[in-house]
Length: 139
Image (cartoon, rainbow, N blue to C red; front, side):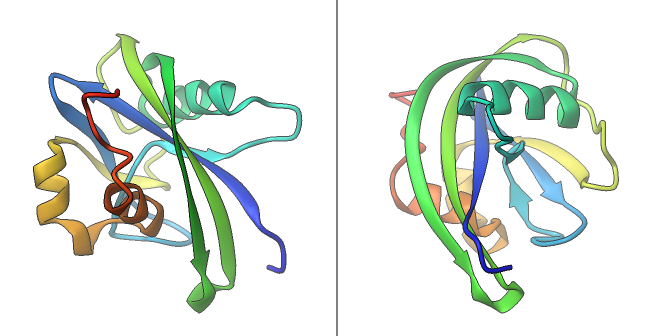
């Protein structure tokens, strides 16, 4: 791939914990990441976050803030993303695996638990954590 793609990561927070998914599939398999995906042409980052969370977890969420972005080159697999992170609050639903080909597990982790698992995090989530974008006081 010779282009930079835009990814959206939905930071769904509930009771001081962030919803994460153990990734399966094309890249980042086995690592923990956020619900999210590619921003589509003509779609706002907010709409992408709401759509992807519903598709992947069955949750209905509302975007509450734009948290920032990370630059995520992945030269070992020939990909490069700029990932936009959006804070989301749950409106309805309980998370469940809607796309088992894309994720094998869901969990709610605190920021401290994410730090403890830093080496198990998908590159964009690791960069998000390292850049201080998961300050839950802002979310």
